[in-house]
Amino acid sequence: MLHKALQNRWVRLGVGILGTFINAFGVNYFIVPMGLFSGGILGLSQLLRTLIAQHVALPAGLDIAGPLYLLLNLPLILLAWNALGRVFVVRTLICTLSSSFFYSILTSPATPILEERIACCLVGGIIGGFGLGLTLTCGCSSGGLDILGLWLTKRGSHFTVGRFSISFNAVLYSICAVIFDVQTALYSVIYNVFSSFMVDHAHQQGISVQLMIFTRDEDPELPRRIMRQLNRGVTYWEGMGAYTGKPIRVMCVAVSKFEVEDLRRIVIELDPHAFFIVQEGVRIEGNFIRKIG
Image 1 (cartoon, rainbow, N blue to C red):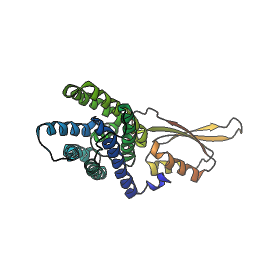
Image 2: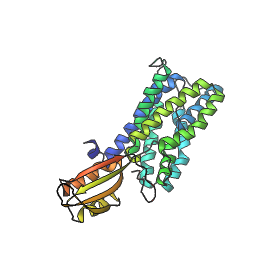
Image 3: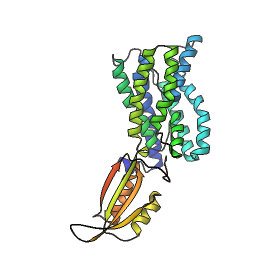
Image 4: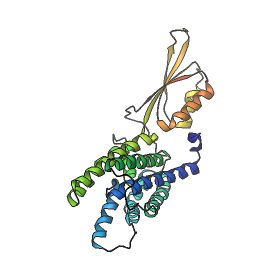
């Protein structure tokens, strides 16, 4: 039901904004109270916020990490405009604004919710990573390294959004270790690993899936509809059922995990007796379109 609802662009945008709220909640309620730093552009914004607060007297309760996050995202949004399409840019701008807003209004508790740092890293990483992955699955982005990660993914790079974040954050946390202390940097790294892991698993459009479809329907309309509605290539060959001794058509299609239900619906409509073999997380290279919206 959720997958069907997400076919509506307004529902997708709404769920994408919800994902930014979930991420901001995870960061501000579990990571910030522990004096840890998020990753990516937000982590850079938090680092700049902390350095500015050490030299400039800011009003009590004012967290400028949200506005800094918005300012640092503007050059990346221009990159997305040229490389990832205008529709994606508009959704990214809306979600970036909502992220900045939620980071600003969700006041971090004075005392940590959980006493153990490792527990905060785990819970904050799961919540925040799930929120980011949900936003990406809806064809949106909260800005930051998501844009660069998606740009690399669309160009066929082996980097996923999560892996690219880890690479960038290696530099960011090294700076934190020098400016603050190694323990702060270490626990921030632990949080980011949990978060990146959740992003890659929640971001269904980043998970490649291979489907083997077995059907007795020899009508060419089935592969044509798959290519027309999903814009995916289809390879098929003729086989023989060992038990029945009857001819069968075997089709191979590579899609993202988010497209599996659409593909299943198309096949079942034309052949209710077809069956599938689904293999997730396959490595696909070459002429394969990496969709982001």
